[in-house]
Image 1 (cartoon, rainbow, N blue to C red):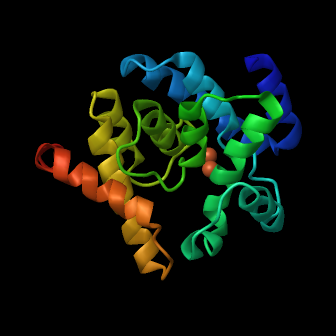
Image 2: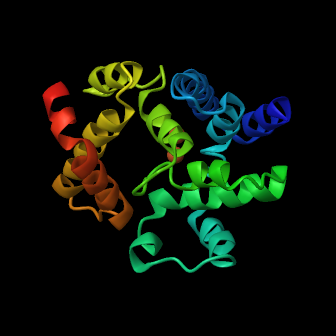
Length: 194
Ligand code: FE
Ligand code: FE
């Protein structure tokens, strides 16, 4: 199964994206182990998280709207659609029925409140995989490997929201809800760590 998925994603991706995908898989396995999540599920979700990214926006909208209605914000946020479409391709191409894996793929860009541990693992692995060098990534990586994945997601989400606001972009409701729910649950502890 893993070999088949790797072969498939390699065949549809640029070298750069494939390298990113392998990086996410590597981090996801390691982080899954730390947080008591199935390493197999983490590897499958990680390998497929960007599997729809080479599709056109029209194509993604077509496959998604066959299954669910997109909100106005989703319809106008093409950069998030590859998560939604990716979950559908993962199910259709590899017969993955496990909801937790599909949701980890679906929500890897926007997140959502009360994510499962697997969803968190994929969300944060996408940000901190070894190929990521963006400013501030070290701090987030450090928190994840210290056992503070919620705080890592909180910082990352706050940075993401600030960035979206500063560039005049739409912020998906899920992202705000995720930030608020972590803040309410873990905010005090996280602030001490930042
Ligand atoms: Fe992605
Ligand atoms: Fe990615």
